[in-house]
Amino acid sequence: EALVYHPAQRQAATAIVLVAGLSELGCYHPRLVALSRSLAAQGLMIVTPDVREFREFRISARPIDQILFWYRQVPQLPGGANVEKTGLAGISYSGTIALIAAARPEIRDTVSFIVAVGPYSNLLRCARNWFAATPGLASSEYYPTRFYAKWIIMLAALDMVRDEKERQFLQKVLENLLLQKTVPQPGPLTAQGKRWYELAVMAENRSDEVLSRQIEQHLVSNMYSELDPMEVLGRIKPPVYLIHGAYDDLIPPQESLDLHRQLTDSHLLITPFLSHTHPTDIPMPLRQKIKAAFEALAFCYEFSQELI
Image (cartoon, rainbow, N blue to C red; front, side, top):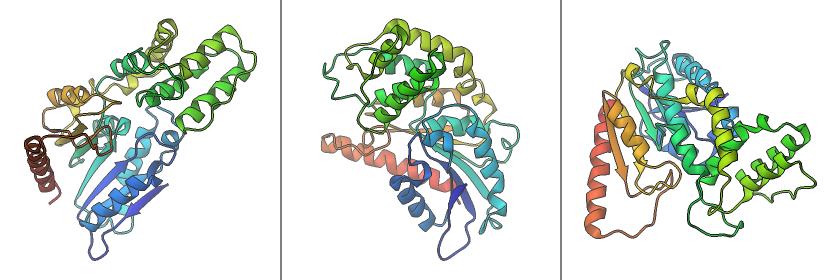
């Protein structure tokens, strides 16, 4: 399934398959809906796939096939007959997935452009940061933004837990943490289950390096390789537009900078007006604001030329 947005007064000549990030709301997230409506009001056709794995906080390469499906469906959708250009766009984790999808031979010769907001270039490097202990609050009542990604990585590796009942309990713990719900209290747990539970709920100034490395090794052999964009970036043909928040506290802007260096045709905007995918209210000197505003306008103008 997908939501499709059309211009009200005319037929769209350009379409964008826009993929939501990892969120329980997926394509129904109010911010994504508002963005899609705004883009449709500017004359674009927007297709937002409802990727079930993303709404369940599951990471894998399987959603790439759904992206390819909706990309190929555009001409057959209502209002799609006059579309001359179709691009891919993704937010956060999905930004990188969109890049990997664009390199697939089924569509790589026809994709017109790609937009990635807050993507990663090296998932393993990011994960090490998400699991690392850093100076911060010692209270478990507060969790830093990066723990959102840590919990998703732990969900992906939950098959490492041997006891089925403990797997089910830990899944509930991790999902409740992601949804900001009350975390269930553990009953008697095995030594393995206790370590997993403690890693999930411990404060940011603590970690379990041994368990973190075990999770890393498990996912390196089972998942990370198929989610690594570096091997396919050389096969991407259309221009790529990378947008990253200068104050991103989940995926560092260095990740987009590394992608930018590897791509043959890319445009990069690192802006202080964004954190990960949200506007920031960090005080800035007027000169910095003006400079950042001009950079954003120049980037948007350049991208708008791709849509014509």
